[in-house]
Length: 549
Image 1 (cartoon, rainbow, N blue to C red):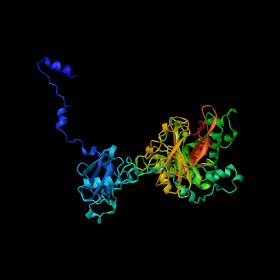
Image 2: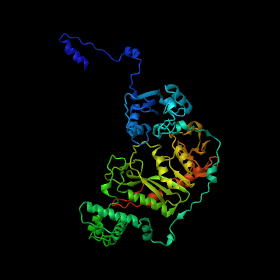
Image 3: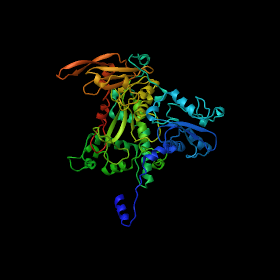
Image 4: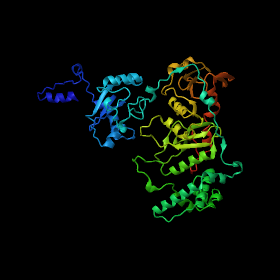
């Protein structure tokens, strides 16, 4: 484009001179870093404009992004944000931000605690103590509670963020080839019962068991909220508890006896008409109940964008009731299993997920914890989408800790797949007297890559393991069929003990291979037991019955 313009001017005896701005001269003379401070990362200091308080933190993201989070105090965990809000103090983002130390992500992402403290103390002009970086030494006694948080190295809930591994600084894991005996598991006296909590359950009918699950309190709530919803919309509709139970019974029959359309159950064509459904209530009454049924008051629903907004507000009472009843009616075995289940749905919903690798690709994703021996569902949680709040830990870690919370400090054993299992999760569960075992991804944090043999160094049937000296958590690698080895992490097994499993060789003959004892549990029992729930979980809709995967 430049040359055609130059030709036009040349016709009028005007010469065009081209000048390159990106020349070597500018690079050699302008050696000063022109990057704005809010676009850098590193150890930063926030000064209160009104008083002499200040806050020191660290980030690998853009400093402007992290400072904005402090000012908004969006997750309620920023000490500096609380200080500004409570005392109504002022803060200028352009004037009251200092960069104390630049960080190189490749070199400083996993620094030693002492090295980081020495760099902080040498770069800061204040004479701060190594134990508290938030206030000058002379102000330490007068430090208010709201700014009493120190620069907590390795604690992502305060000054650090979730893009910095919480244990990469504070905890240094030492791996060894010498197995550590699981004295905690062997010495723990597990005294929980196993089985149904209902007396004489073998003599109870299906209706009696169903009434134990759907007690009068939840039925009364549904009746009350359904009638309230009808009155709020100016409709003359009223339902009673007996009629509500008949409605649920109709749904159960429809779930077992599938027809292409809902109205066919009341059809005059005997090829489709189902007398058990048609004789319970009329089609008009069934549709009226289906239209008005509610579990919560719509007028009290939190608005979107507020702190207490809940995507499952209209279903929350039923979800909490079922989770409570599942635990009250059955005492599981010591072994528990956690996995995800997909409920097929192709309509419009903000909760719908797409998982191309699953048998059911579109629908609602539900986290489920079951008794590993019976497949009985103990608790579940519907996935509501990405959590925007600054919460410590991965989604899998938070899900396991939430579902297993009622069974902490009792000595239970959790089994899960590689989506959930992390070294941090097993460490947290050990603190809660809960043991865990599961497959493990090699791209997880703290995976002892340098301490284990490479996949190519292990032949078929060979294995290797390492053990954390502090926690006793073992990581085992086993070369099964295929190019890649399979990795298992456990906090309850002794990796030095091996058992024999049958594997078919290239000639089609079975051969015994020695594997670590946790592999026997993974292969034979625990992984895939969630399939029992997916098999017997009827979806009471008028589409096809689907199960998760």
